[in-house]
Structures are given as C-alpha cells and as structure tokens.
Length: 257
Image (cartoon, rainbow, N blue to C red; front, side, top):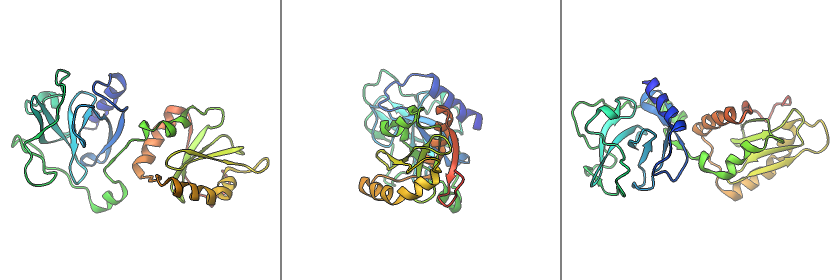
C-alpha cells in the first residue's frame, strides 16, 4: 500500500497537470499511518474535491480520511473506497476525470448526513479512525505552501541561504547561511522578514532572539501565520529539493547555531 501511494507521488512529478489551477499539493492519508501523497485542485470540479495525478477525483471526510469519487458524465459520485486501499483503474465504480468533460459540477449520490460517503458497493473497507493522540499531533490536512510564490522564493536565495528549520516560539520557518549570518529570514505567514545581525561573528540564534519581538509584532499584523506539523514535513521535503541543510526544530534558547 505504501508503494502504491508513493507511485502517485512519482506520477505527480512526471505527468502534466490537466485541469490544474495549482501545483502539487501535499496530502496525508491517516488511514495508512499518515503516508504522504500529492494531489492537485482541478478547475472544473466543486470545492473540497481534488484529483490524484493518475486522474482520479478524491475527497476527505470529517475524520480526515481521503476517499475516491467517480467522475460521472452528469456529476460526481462519492464512493467509500479509501485512497490507497484499491487500484482505481481496476474498479468499475471509480471513473477517472476525463478530459472530454467540460464541467463536473453537481455532486450526486449524497445523502442527508454531512460528509458521509455514498456507498456504491459492498466490497469496501471501513475507514481507519486514528487514535485521538495521533489526530492531536498530525491534523489530517494538506498544505498549500507550494502555491505561495512569496514562500517558495526562499528556495532561490542561494546566495544568502543554505539551511532552514523551524523556530520553536512562535513556530515559524527560519533560514540563513553559514554559522555567523549577516541576515536571518523568518516567515510571517505572508512574507519573509529579514533580521540583520548587529556586528560580525554573531550567531544566528542571537540575531533571532534580538529580533523576535519585532517578528512577533509583524506576524500578528500579517495575521496569517498558522504553522502545522504537516507544514514542517512539507518544508523538510522542500529543503532537500533546494539543497538546503535541514535544521529541524530551532530552540531559541541555544547558542550554537
């Protein structure tokens, strides 16, 4: 099952993005130990529906579990096939998002219970409900950081960044270059705020601590900083792609960074 979901990630990197108005979105499947896979948001489907890169619609229930939906000619039919539990191309109940369909707008087959998947067959698996401790740590959600041009710009700043991590209080990404950087960049939720070192051979942590008050005020003004554990996992992937050293959690009480 892990191999199947990882294949979807591979297809995401190799295939085009028909119907896509966004780049790859990282998603987490709680039914299989929060394994990661990529999806995108098509232009021609209702809100809260997404598509895998092999061309199948998916949606998420209240518990955060991802299910397949079938792209019928007259609308979308929800199924209770869990993403990762079946190979959709072998299931007659799951029709792919066909390029000949100009708009898949109505949602068919739903009942009066909110977010209850429409059962199209009895040969399905029950959804796995994560323990409450897991849901508290890993909110089964997705991150759209990859579609934020301001955020992604940090990956091109090779002259001033070679490492990145997450400061502990408040939780936010921070990036810089070397052990005594002239500038630190911290994500406010809308932009990368620059903190400038006062003098030479000043550690990154010292600069962060000195500028933390100003950063907190700016982040509060921007009112957009909502960093999650899922975002951290995504940023770790991006750090590898950009060739940056991954610092993990940056404890502002340390003096050796």
